Length: 146
Image (cartoon, rainbow, N blue to C red; front, side, top):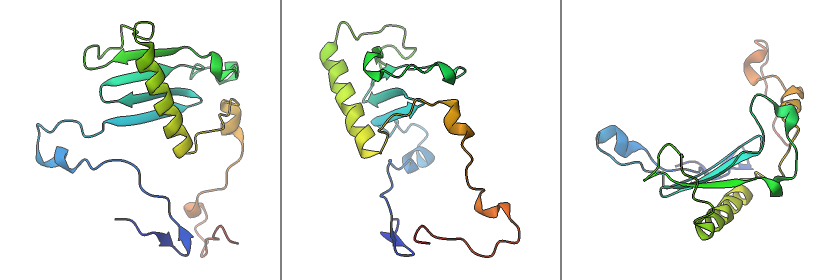
């Protein structure tokens, strides 16, 4: 269990599920029933065997990110029957796709994914503060309140 506050700062709750069962039982079934994904606004939502995905840009060409996320094509797969994602079921099952897209939006809101940022690799080029252990002579770490 994590503390509610650390040094006076309220902590966000831990998200996820325990994987302890997989350590004690080799036959344990997967414990995660739901998971959202977003990297460079490529996104997906998995829910109990179904996955909806939208590829927004290419990982190797972040400079091509077009914006206009509402125009991205969403695909739908039943992983229990098609683990290789070979058969897009979006056209045959628009209700399931809409359900998963709503679920993605809920998870994205809850996990502060929005607003999307299409700067791609340019985001990575923004200088970041050095990690705390980078200066061997450092004896103090400033908090957010300082």
